[in-house]
Amino acid sequence: MTKNTDHLGRPIVVVTGIGVLTSLGQGKEANWTALTSGVSGIHRITRFPTAGMRTTIAATVDFVSVDDMSAPALSERLADLVIQEAISESGIGAKGDFPGPLFLALPPVEMEWPQRQALAAASGANETVAYDDLLRAAGTGQFGAYYERFLFGSVAEHLADRFGTKGSPVATSTACASGGTAIQLGVEAIRRGESNAALVVGTDASINQESIIRFSLLSALSTRNDPPSASARPFSKDRDGFVMAEGAGALVLESLESARARGATILGVIEGCGEAADGFHRTRSSPDGKPIIACMRNALADAGLSPDDIGYVNAHGTGTPENDKMEWVGVSAVFGERAGSIPVSSNKSMIGHTLTAAGAIEAIFTLMSISRGVLPPTINYDTPDPTVPIDCVPNVARPAKVKHAISNSFGFGGQNVCVVLGAAP
Image (cartoon, rainbow, N blue to C red; front, side, top):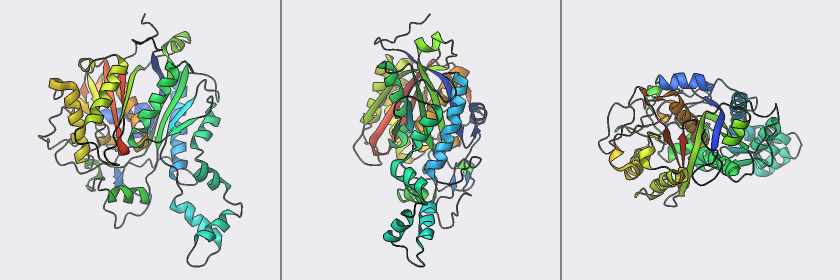
């Protein structure tokens, strides 16, 4: 039997439950079937008017709704659904009594136009609404939920109360690396002996008019609106930007010793985590690729593995011209002569970029790739980029026996996290 500690004598951290929800559907089986079939969840935006906008497509989760539509409210609902799935599969604890802390990755919480309009309507102002009018409206006492939500966040607190996690919940927002950061925090808590289990969640439902416009102003979004399914084109020569998406992923982490003691089914191992900050630019990566290279090497060192041990890379693969090229620079530096032959595919070609949830969702898909022996494809790969000679598992899923894999998450502001995942012992 495999020992319960790793190469540094730390508790081995395993996954005993997962839950996932994306534009492809709710639940890991629905997502896996669509993902490995090359189905796209990207479609035209119907949630709000898009007239005059350069980008009119996204991977919204329209089959889930909330009464008071806002990114925090919908993000909380998505997280609730995936946590239920993950805890049910794990069989850990009791209902409303999870035996460990919550680490949550979520988008920034800010007031959105529907809430601003509600305050304005309550202010009684007939024409231009000034800030003082909004304060008077808030002072009526009708908007206590707004006060809690938009001043104090509250998403993590609500989830912690609902599922009975232990200690103060930790909410993190490190841009596109957030899901990976949450996983790393959970792993470190178990390795330090603070808990035998941790609940790790990444969730994001921040598609609204403002967010689309903000990313458009950065020239980061694809404008290939027709057909929507062909818009996300990671690693292709004709890629023109990423597609915003919504979704959530949850993982129940446990020490191997604890999981074995209660007879849990082990889905895979979180073997290592690595991070490296890049202060080069608030959106762009350093052109020499050093932070990305360091991030992957740090994760491998933490796992006690060499590049030759890795059989698959779940790429960050956003489809922006610069990001894909920089990821290739990192992969080629880390894997050397193997760089062009190691499979490196991007889930974002089908589910879009789920932003703060991406690291958690893509780690889940990586675990499923290992356990099920199938690598999801990178769809829309019709025009190879000669400057990025990568094996991106083009267009069709591929059977493959993989024991160790890397999942990359590279965020705005130079926040980079890599997670090394392995087969169940």
